Image 1 (cartoon, one colour):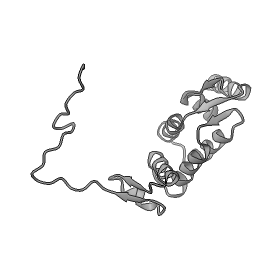
Image 2 (cartoon, rainbow, N blue to C red; image 1 turned 180 degrees about the vertical axis):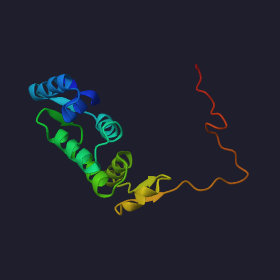
Image 3 (cartoon, helix red, strand yellow; image 1 turned 60 degrees about the vertical axis):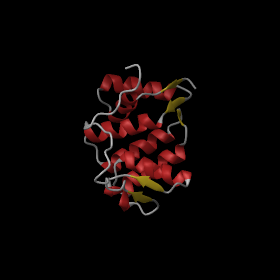
Image 4 (cartoon, helix red, strand yellow; image 1 turned 135 degrees about the horizontal axis):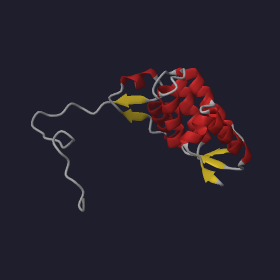
Amino acid sequence: MSAFVDTNVLVRHLTGDPPEMATRATAYLSAERELLLTDLVAAETVYVLESFYEAPRDDVAQALRSLIAFDSIVCVDPSLLLRAVEVYETDRVDFAEAYLVACAESTGVGKIASFDRSIDRVDTIERVEPPPRDAGIERGGFQQGWDEPAGL
């Protein structure tokens, strides 16, 4: 493994923006033998392409597939990432939820605890919502203040 690859190198390569950095990024990706693409960087790449470049979902999905297939790119679990891309593209859920679906499927857990109803579009897993709070039970959280870890 020669290095981990960061989102900015991938985005420059995929978008050609700015041209000078894009040329360098593409040359680097082509010249290196093995660059590790983490799942987090893949997710961030989706986010940048969607939010900043306003790329259509189908284009983003194809871009991720091309990165995963790139000769010098190595992924920890390429089949997991490819399944996340498939769910993202076909079921029209955010990439983070698509990744959770792929994880739930691959581990056999089959359930995702979430308030996000878009996950219901995927029929291979079950979405479960945390139950409503009992009236007499107080729970911690940002609004009520969590206890700070010792030493902070």
